[in-house]
Image (cartoon, rainbow, N blue to C red; front, side, top):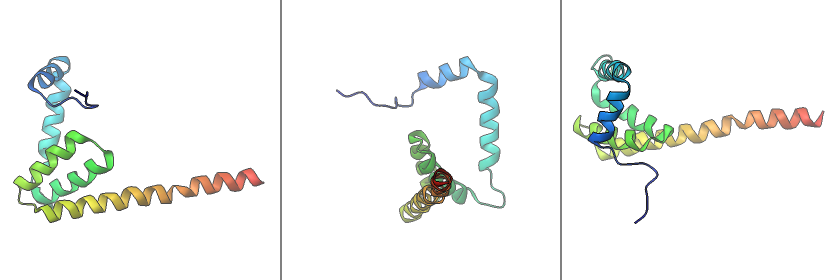
Length: 111
């Protein structure tokens, strides 16, 4: 049996997290509820943004949770995949844009 890099989410982990820092956990939950509440953007749109952001941050728990929530709030599989492609372009674009740092360093080294 191979060991996973990420342990599966469990009630035991959730209980320990709460026991170790109940105040910040409650504040985070309230913050999350407020952020995902309908406003100028509906919940489905917010979940699609979260799916894209989760792929950029590469959080497997967030990918699972927000993909499931996006589906629950009416996102199609095609919309989810399109959001992932947007995230992919943004991550690749950031790597390309940051090449300016390497070019600047190389130019300075030649002087």
